Length: 264
Image (cartoon, rainbow, N blue to C red; front, side, top):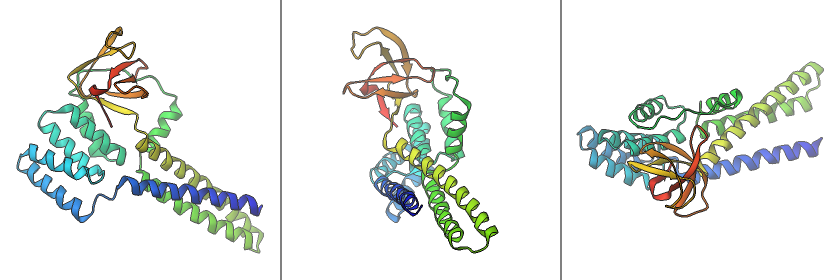
């Protein structure tokens, strides 16, 4: 029993350490004095209607580290200059960091409404769609905090269960321990799932006014269909430098030139 408990605790600690290290590498704490000061300059230019300057400032700020608020403001600036593709790109990047942000979601849908392509999504299994919606309720950091907090509560409940004398108390805290363990496991899995989406970004936005999707990774390949700027695709094969195999929401696949895409 002690050996199983030791392995269980070690697994959680390793998961949380990896998650914390990943958070550091992404520099999500983009609310430092330097970033806030630079962002303030961009906000000032945006408020004055100088969107070109705002874009330049926000792009510079993002070189220091990712920030949902800066991506969001950059998307707004691009939207104001009618660069819909780059507006969508930056809204999507902001949504990766803050999946529950309603303002980002609204502006992204507004920008998407101005694109040309209309593709129907494949029907997903209900619980897959439910899980995605559930996971997007909070950011990776929040899920990680929940996972750590409930893991600590699991350890406390388990300790009380082991050392309590009364049978009723042991039974109660055994139930608590199981519940906290389940919540911690789920929250940890969700946080790590979001981390994988951030590290292995397979979605991209079409950046050119129009591009032909072909049957093979060659300019001589058969023309399958045409995509227009702002359309979101999933990269399914990234093995060729100048070409990417992409998949659409309706399941259609084909090859597109790398220069026509920008990864989210």
